[in-house]
Length: 307
Image 1 (cartoon, helix red, strand yellow):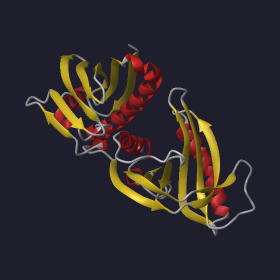
Image 2 (cartoon, one colour):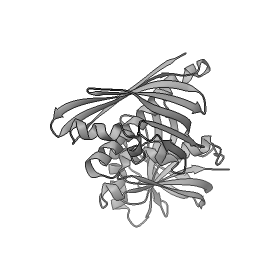
Image 3 (tube, helix red, strand yellow):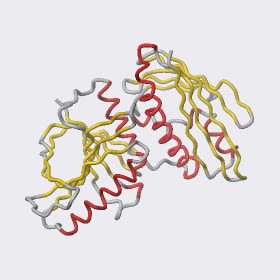
Image 4 (cartoon, helix red, strand yellow):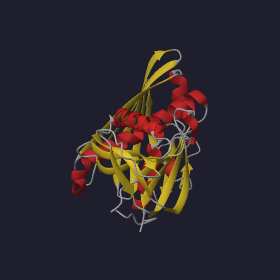
């Protein structure tokens, strides 16, 4: 069976004992888990000693994780997935003391996929890696602040009326999307400033292609316009988003955690909570400006066209 390995690290402003007290108590996992935020109503149970955790949900599947061993600087877990398919993995937390008030925490997973899913190896490692990145950021928040600056709202179905726009189409990797998109929006903001009389409040990105195996994302970022503009800067183009019925998950918090909303809406589609209209690519709308809003209050809506 194809083997998988994921490894991610973060530095936390707390000593190893404080970090250890959180990651060895499953009663404290739900606030920072990159999975339970996708399905808050999922069933779960924690053993009396806090060392074993079971869950069962439509979106996040079912399984059980238990602490297998606790050593100096190392916590080892046994992880069993029961649904949507059976598999087993070993996952570790490695704690490295930087100083009395700082810990480098590394989260690893080693497992395997069913033989018929060999072609998904790279994709699964990237997806789990993205979950781990968000999980570590939320764990850092939870330990340092006592709370996590990210939440989801499931807004359900609505009608998107469509819009005309001016935008930039780009291609990048998962790792570089932040800097590439930031550069795109700086150019779009310059256009919007000069053409403020025709620009609407619809700032968005449309994702034409996610290829996790090849680590490639193709997207268009743009801003809505009320009327036609003849002065389109080089590198930009005019286009339109079609009217369609959409399913929406709202993310409130820093953009680096907005992957929670993407993961949620994709898990909803896999759980057959709605049927995606694949003729229209997924859209992300930015409801307030990062120039005027604190990261914890940023709002972005992930919209998937549905049939």
